[in-house]
Length: 91
Image (cartoon, rainbow, N blue to C red; front, side):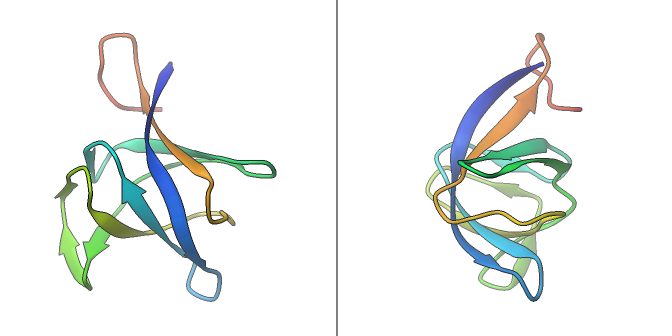
């Protein structure tokens, strides 16, 4: 499995387990992503995304999206999309 950097974490809201991501590449519900930082290494599937409190299925570069996360992430952690050799996303 290969990984493509798609953005970074700008905020983490621990009480609701939500991270805000600043995207540099497209992201869709159903994609598998990995958070990587000095003390972070979390992988998960994107179950839902929001922009301005509205649910969306796809986000584009430049968007700031909120997603529910399964573990603790930190501001400045890098976000990668997990892809297979054929370019498809998945675990």
